[in-house]
Image (cartoon, rainbow, N blue to C red; front, top):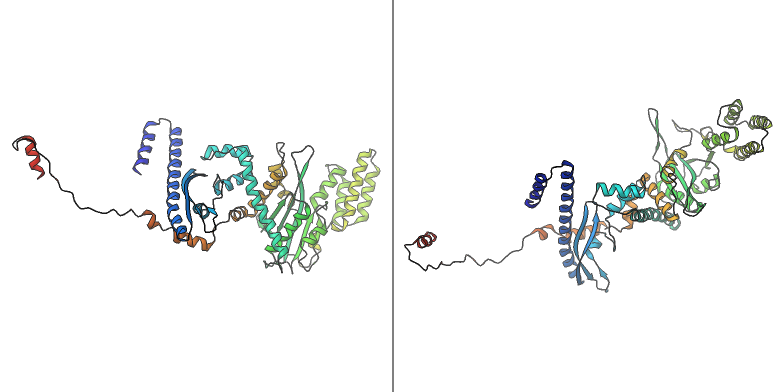
Amino acid sequence: MTTIITEMYQILKETPDVLAMEEKLQQLMYHWFSDLVGEALTSLDEPVREAKKKEGWDVETRDARTVQFLFGPVAYSRTLMTDREGISHYPLDEHLSIQPNQRYSPLVEVKTAEMTAESTYREVERVLKEWTPVSLSHQTVGAIVKRVGEAQAEADKGLVTELDEAAELPSGREVSHLYAEADGVFVRGTAKKQGIEVSHAITYEGWDTNGKRVALQHPNVLMTTQPTAAFWKEVQAATAHRYSLETTQVVTNSDGGAGYTPEKFQEAFSQSQYPVLNQLDAYHVHQALNRALGAAQSETKTKIREALREHNQDDFRLWLDTYESTLEEDKAIEKVKKLRSYILENWDRIIDWRDHVEDPPEGARSLGAMESNQRHVTFRMKRRGMHWSPRGAEAMVKIKQGLLNRTLREAYLARKKPRSVRQQRRFAQMVRMTDILRDPVRESNGATSGTIALHTAHSTAMGHMVKSFS
């Protein structure tokens, strides 16, 4: 402690620039703390080694390792040992859940991945270098993103496997109504003219209002770039592990595009004894009208909206045919034909779900949360000419999903095979701080006696000094 205070004093005394002074103090803090953590880990190795020796393990060698933590690089020594079956282990690393060849601590990897959910790889590289002693290249940031994202993907696939192998459905919470919306968005791939579809679903239990602000109640998100068949399996598994849907009325919303049809929702939520109600997304109806009739307001658009709202197909055909008769360009006529086909094919789904269920919940609102939630994908993955590899795109959307659902860290730690409660108890018994901090006992030989030889007269000054020692 005296040494670090001395070094701090030297920095305070010799650094005229207050900015440079604070930077040097920060570097000193990181350096000292990293050294102390390294010493602590090295000290932990001894009791772990001795405990394993009692179990019949053999010591092979002792070597050093450096791991980059958020506060700096930590160097420590640990023992390589062989178990009774001849398999080599680093017991300390295994107890700490540090994997072979792992250069960065779990917190560094998770924090880095979380930052990339909002910032580019190069920006994350710059911020880490500015604010921490962690130095990563943008390529390394990308590699970390893939590892962390794949952990969330594995957790989702694990739920699907568990549901497929289970003899009965999992037991979850019971809710009277469950709302689900799904849609897809394309991002650019690395190959020329290649698009990668991100399938995106969100389930929620209702709405919470605070003044004019409205928030979804208990939302749960699922995103993937896998084929839609795999996507719907993940939706079904995630929902089955959260809810018991036997007596739940499921209400769904989509644009009716390929892969997001009413049949897909019915299959995903087939646990419910009630038919799954599906409505056509109002936003996509609005967009279809604007594409065919233009963005400006007109009497025709107003009348068509009234016909859709009143579910009057005759009036819809009448007003659309009247508008088509005024057109001369083939391109404009083709747009009207596409609108007519889109609306009539989905006519039974252009409804307000609240008019088609018995006793809708108090404060129930129209569905349509998907478009605003798609911004989680589009704002991060479709700006500044970004291109994504299939693996990188899947990892990024899984990181976004894990952050929104607050499951990312849990999924990442599960992949690291953390210690169980029993293993933690054994480790605590193995490592007793009294054994680590206790000073070694040295044998005492008692006080040593002796004399000082005097080769001159006792009356001299040297003689008087010798007498004073007696």
